[in-house]
Image (cartoon, rainbow, N blue to C red; front, side, top):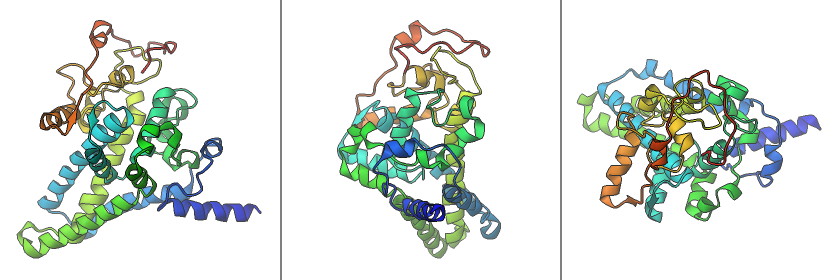
Length: 330
């Protein structure tokens, strides 16, 4: 019986690579399972990292490196500006067609669907650095918060009841349910682009396999680890301006590599503002880009930093004990 259950669970995990909602009708029961690393869910990350080793076979070119850097920043902005600041927190408004395009762009980052991402992130804010926080480094350690939590079956399904504002759009549910579709098409497109450039512009020195390795595998791997650093390192390293009831911190370095997400303590104090770098010296590239988008009329009603953020700021020493959670905690 146990072997049958193991085979059934393994088959379901494989099906989940293509249909993430399959067999997830009872989300509460799945969430009640114990946390553990599951090999079948580790395998995609292993393949992603192994794909980076293809560089020893394909070599490199300035074209491939340039496209890799561009795709890193474009897709990082898709995660920070849209998956995070729009879908998770609704810090600005946009039209339904633009919303779908934002979700489509975010899906190329290979960080699953917009509804799953938003559900997990909202859950994190409700339980930040508490026992129920699925990726708290202070509770479960660095590696679990960085990557381990994603490999656990209990964190795989999307609880649509927690993202009803997004689940009412069938096109978003489709992208969320079949969240490998866009990455597959994206990788195929890069392979095709590499072939096109090799045939028509041989002087660039790029090939189809080279662009796949650099533009998809290397760029995506760097993007994943940079984003994951907010879950792990942003709760361990940096300074705390606000007593937020958790261990969120501000880090200039993380803000640079994630286009502004490193001002994590600011964000945990006022999560509903579109801007995470509250002062001019706190570089927040995602905010600058969103502000520029607002000038085009594509997005509007960007929620500003509340005045109370400046009226009640105070330094918190690194050794300061975590205070009790209050009703204003973001």
